[in-house]
Image (cartoon, rainbow, N blue to C red; front, side, top):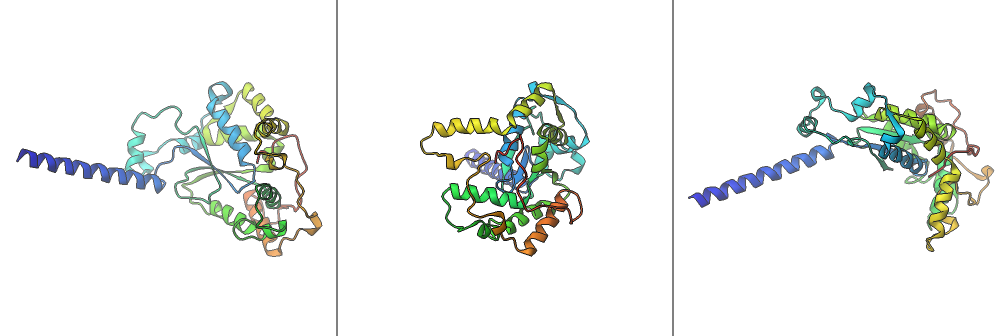
Length: 297
């Protein structure tokens, strides 16, 4: 009899544990819990650079950052029990959490998902993205596109995909706190824009050492030197595979590029929305002039 009861208890305990594990998994997948901030970008929008800089600063925040907490950063990284519908989130909020919680950035090219709660969404002028993406694909051995015009109109990787990507973030619910950042602004003033991101998302500022660090590591020459070291010590790589400010030929002049009128209008409207301005904001059709700061992607 005792053996029978003991087996029954074991079976019941096993079922409870399995049910609890499944519930936790469901809550994580459904977006009830998110510890780290997600950096979302369409490929070749500068995300690798921002990803590298932010994670370096966060990993060394005791030396490079100062605390500047405010309400928005608190809402991103902490938990309001009255607003939580997740039992797991409530339980985790009542437990001791490591001080590193929420101080890390994950990168994705995925469209918006419900589990993304704290997001940095990086965007770049779409034709510049297409030029950079085309160079990357050709250097990677892709032969799907005979010219840049074919990539521009491609439903899966061209401007239609670019529009779908940013529309998904524009349509995200208010529960997803999103910090939209223009790559052109980041290149023009990296120290100030990085500090704004740190403050708006993590409640951190840069001290003098942090500002000097960002100024140094955000230069094109800094990234190119590191890439040169990697390429020179890997026989599988070549100069054609450079990621940072690649200048490989596109095979077409600017006059030969063709952007359908409807795509052009939709891209201008999206850039106008992302920039927080009217739809007639000039999105431009030429690549921004070179500057002293990074193009790490």
